[in-house]
Amino acid sequence: MAQLIDGKQLSNQVLQEVASEVEQLRAEHDVVPTLAVVLVGEDPASQVYVRNKVKRAKETGMGSIEHRLGTATTQGDLNQLIDQLNNDPQVHGILVQLPLPSHLDEEQVIAAINPAKDVDGFHPVNVGALAAGQASLVPCTPQGCMIMLRQVHPDLSGKNAVVVGRSNIVGKPMAALLLQANCTVTIAHSRTKDIESLCRNADIVIAAAGRMELINADWIRPGATVIDVGINAIEVDGKRKLVGDVAFDSVSEIAGAITPVPGGVGPMTIACLLLNTTRAARRQLA
Ligand code: NAD
Image 1: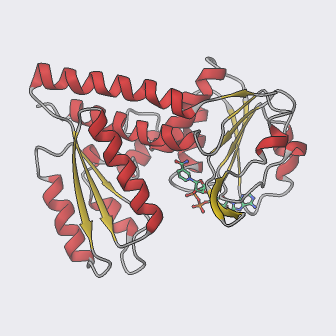
Image 2: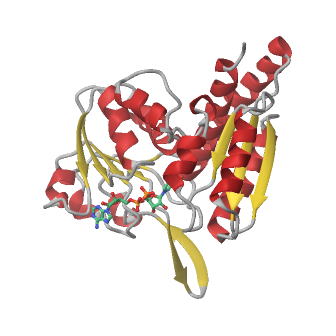
């Protein structure tokens, strides 16, 4: 049976580190690291994500500010709010919860955030810095995956890693981080031919396609490490349930280590968001 990489437990460790950094910034610099979260519209999943982020932020002693805007919010209104947060010295991190209602331009909104406060790491300046191997605010989900991987592989050098998915928020930054850790990286996506055999050759498989049970035991090399980023909502016996992109039961009999869904990458993502907020606050010290 595969070793379970427990995201809840590991995220609690990260949150403890965050809490002590919050305390240190307060004691030494009289600064309360503060995260501003902006939610536009009524998307139920986004409401849950925002609630969890704010709750965890409060638990670490960090400041948090919530801005809930109606679905009819215009691009101008949103840009004005971002401008205000960019210029507020009490705000160290800004997160605009995605997806935005379809009449709003996500790219423009991301570009409007001050890169120094871009705790999601989506601003082109931070994306470029990551690609160039420079210090930057790194997207939270791949950052969390790296912490999980390091539990199993303190040295990732020379490992064959396959990332399934090439989105800007997960797949691409994930591949950049693995490359930085000296892995040999393959990015697979919806047009890739024979993903199955690519995965079978991998020491590490990162599943980030958003396709339920895409990855089954036949795809996995015995002993490989499998990180499941996918979140897919399904109904079982009339009840809503979350599952990943990996067929957990069968794959955990083959893999060496695996992350569960829920309780895997999800909690790590939130912990890394708060880690980024303390990092941003420290860098903003005059
Ligand atoms: P996305 O839809 O933007 O990208 C999905 C990627 O998967 C695309 O690059 C696409 O080419 C690829 N893909 C789709 N179908 C495929 C297939 N059959 N075979 C191979 N590749 C395929 O999604 P995203 O935002 O990157 O998120 C991916 C998944 O991760 C979703 O389930 C999302 O909910 C989840 N997610 C979880 C967290 C977390 O904190 N746990 C954070 C972000 C995203």
